[in-house]
Image (cartoon, rainbow, N blue to C red; front, side):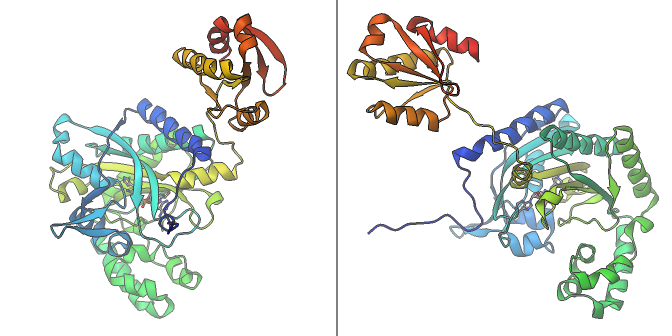
Length: 418
Ligand code: HAM
C-alpha cells in the first residue's frame, strides 16, 4: 500500500524554479559582507536547550512557547536553534576567538520556531545574520546598520529603518519598575496578553498590536526619557554616525525586540510589502551576552535578515527569478547522433559550456520541446549527416535563426558568446 507523506506544516521546499532567488540573496550577502570584513561561520542547527534558555531568555515567547525541544535518547536536552546569535556566541567562546580581538562573523541557515504559520511566518525559516564582537563603540553600530542598508539597496529592496535604545543594566531596571507600575495601574484597559506580560516581560507590552491597548501604550513612560548618560551618549553617536553615512532612519520609542539579550541599540528594517509581518531584518547590541554564556566580558552587536521575507518582497516587486539555463541543447537525429551527442556534450562541458540533452532520445519534436522547457539559448541537431560533414546548424531558440558551425569549433564559438 502506498502512502503519500506531506512535508511538515510551516516548513517549505524551495524548488529548482525558485532557488535562483535564494542564490541571489546569498551571493549579494557574501559580496557585501566581505566588503565590510565579515567572515562566515557555520554552527550546528541543534544546540543544548540551556543555551537558548540562558541566552535568549526564559520569559521570551521564543523560548517559552516556540522552541522545538527534545531529549537525545534520554541524555541531553536539546533544541533546534530558533535564532543564530546564541550558537554563534557559544562558538565564539568555545573556540577562544576573543583572544584575537574584535571579530566580524556572518552566517546563513535554517532556524526553527513553532509559530502559527502564515504568509512571511514559518516554522522553518532562514536567516542571513551578522555578529560583530569586541567593539563597544557606537561606530560599529552605525557601520553595521549601514552595511545592512547597503545590502538591501543592492537588492533593490526598499525598507524603513526603525531605531531605538533599550537602555542597559544601569538604567533599565528603574525604568522597568516605572513601566510595571504604570501598566498595572492601567491593567483594566489592557488585553490578556499585556496583563500577563506586565510582570514577566513588561518591555514586550509596548510592542502589543491590539488596537484597544494603544491609548494606554501611547501614554506609557518612554525608555528614551529614562536612559542613563552612557546610553544617551551612545544613542546620539549612533544616530550621528548614520547621518554621516547617509542612512535614513526614524527613532521609534516603542521599538522593543523579542529577545532578552539586547542593550542600547535596537533596530529593525520593515517593509509594507510584508503586511503584518513587516520586519525583514532585526538586530541590536548585546553587550552582556558573551559573559552570560561563560565567556569574558565582550561587547557585541548583530542582526538577522529573514530570507523568506526577502524573497516575498522581491516577488511583490515583480523581480524575475534569476535562472541558470543551458547554453545549448543537443538533439539527436538518429542512432549515430544519439551516441555522438554524449561525446559532444562531454567536450562542451569540459570547455565550461553548460549543455543539456534529452537522454531519452526519440522524436525531434519531443527533444526540441525539452530544449524550450529548460530554457536553452541554442539547439543543435546531430545525426549521421552532420557527423559526416563535420558541421551542424546552431539554432537560436529565441529567433529561430540557424547558423552553420563546424563541430570542432562549437565549444569555442559558444564560450565566446557567453
Ligand atoms: P529576530 O527579530 O527574532 O532576531 O529575527 C530576525 C528576522 O528573522 C526577522 O526580522 C524576520 O525577518 C525573520 N524571522 C523571524 N521569525 C520568522 C519566522 N517565523 N518566519 C519567517 N521569518 C522569520 C533574531 O533572530 C536575532 N538573532 C537577530 C540578531 C542577531 N540580533 C543580534 N544578532
